[in-house]
Image 1 (spheres, rainbow, N blue to C red):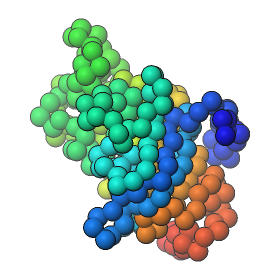
Image 2 (cartoon, one colour; image 1 turned 135 degrees about the horizontal axis):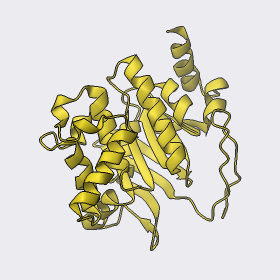
Image 3 (tube, helix red, strand yellow; image 1 turned 60 degrees about the vertical axis):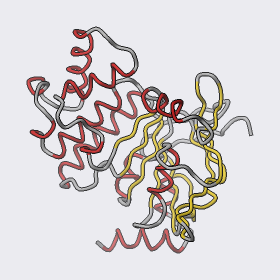
Image 4 (tube, rainbow, N blue to C red; image 1 turned 90 degrees about the vertical axis):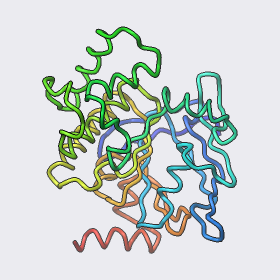
Length: 274
């Protein structure tokens, strides 16, 4: 199939147009930990500008899958084909140097704990500037100006540019991590529970920010979470995992409003009963 039929997401009313090829094509991805299955035979396409949510309870395999997709773990089987500027490449068989280059340029990874994605001993502006320098920026004034612009975009006051992240609240640290990741305009963003551990009011503010940036920048995103409210707000399409396998997938509203698999029904009903 050379093109994808576009659909309209009921939440965002955003149309996804046909594309020649997916941005990411995953085929038969499998990871084992001894006799235990981390994820098994996962296959899907991610299209330019699409947000894919992956949900499931702890131990369902969603974090293992994300780590394999982002190159943090080596899968035992399968392909992860990314549409690079030079053409489609299987990132599983890439050299470590090539994957690091992708991580600096076309990819970004937002960790659940922002301390895992920030340099805590470097200023807020320095954290953003480091990502720019990694892609070749060298003019100090231009770098600081871009950093200042992005701090303001993620709602961090300009006079905090020289403060270190350890002086920030958890929500501010997460917004700084987002600025650090998005300043270079990556084509694919991996997000691992980006609102986890935050207060409800802070979560809502962060989700509004993320939704706006995804729309404005036309980002392709794979987001892993246990929170169905997060994927309903952000994701166009949803995959549900249980025991390392995808048990249901489809448009987010369709899956959540009319779940077909018993496990998905249990997840949705558990949320409704809270």
